[in-house]
Image 1 (cartoon, helix red, strand yellow):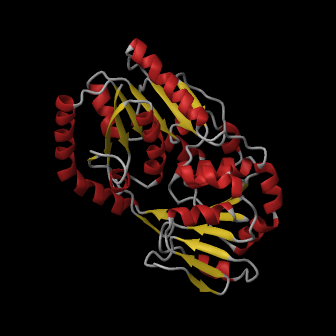
Image 2 (image 1 turned 90 degrees about the vertical axis):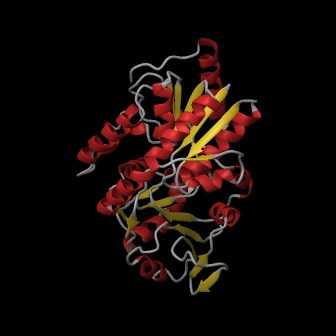
Length: 367
């Protein structure tokens, strides 16, 4: 089949996950046209030929929260040049490719192409779990999140309505409340799949923060002098490892990070789905501190704690870190109950959905 594949460029998790799916589609003989925005373009263009760059929304972060005003102004400015370019890209796709199906990783322009040209759309992402599943139990005991949940649910619902099918990646399994929805395990990179055989408790803790400013985090880490913390993201200018007491500052390295993750005792990070899914697969307890204003990350962290896989906290405090380390064995025991056979289930479900669309030429229906 001829497949138009759209990848949202906000954050690199969508790109790394989509890369796994794209490899599978190409291995099955499909023709794939890739459109992507933001930094994700360069990552995918390094591997796949003809990746088209389109305009996408950006999020501005500082001090572990979304800066709403700066985000709004940046995106308003980008629309002046981005929108005309996206329209041109649509016109070229009509003439040159004529896709038979659209696959969207939470990406709007490819979805709108499918909607306007009566091409069935398949959604593959983790965000749709907010709208297409019930979360009453996990939200009932948490103050102040019901309003945020309703807002996030409305946004996600409006993002890609009426898809032919929704493949929702997740490590937790709430009740599904909408038709044409299938829950599948997290999409895992080849490096993570290979690391499972070598995974063990090496005693150190991996710390990952994507923003360079993060309050008093470093002071908290230094307070646990007997524990080594391997820190990623806070010093982006590094080219080599730097050791300062119990802190080991790491430059970004995809394989190096996976190796550290697989041999860690625990993880301290945000609430992003990609790393959380990898930590769960490798059996690593996590202290999750979601970005302020990002309900999807909060939901991930709430389910992480509900399942006994780690902790959800609003900031990294000495008390929270002590609770993580003291409970690491208990969390690891709960994680041993998690089951995932790599990406097998996702690929099987995707192949099945595409096969059904190819036979029936699918129709976009109401959500």
